Image: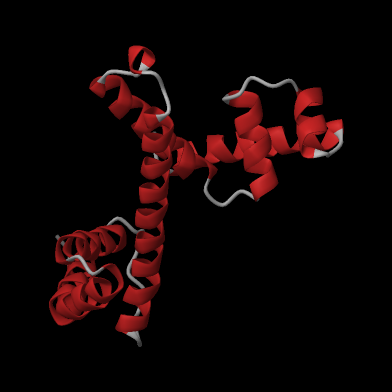
Length: 172
């Protein structure tokens, strides 16, 4: 390993050793759960580790806070999705409720969809979900959302392209 390759590891190691405790405390104050805070602190450093490069940091805590806020937002969004899914399951008659395995697969699919659609404007996500999940036709979506048919087509294409490039970015 050349010295050029070791420097980012040394930087990351120093960042972790110098600021992990502080970040864990910062997250604990926002979550009021030490276990979730510890997990999200680790997720923050994993996100940095999986990044392309570690920038030269003048304000490491500001950098960590920015990354941790994104991790925290994803955590809360995941909780919201899980809660909504469990509420919809509770409304189903027991005879048609999915098995535990099916529930896990469905929840994972919902979370994956959320990840893929992250960053799209709300109306674009709505169009995509109404077409893909609810099976509505473009004219039905246009009528339901009060937008033009050409907008529905444009938004659907934008969402599909976004999903394609999101998959490429995640290397899947």
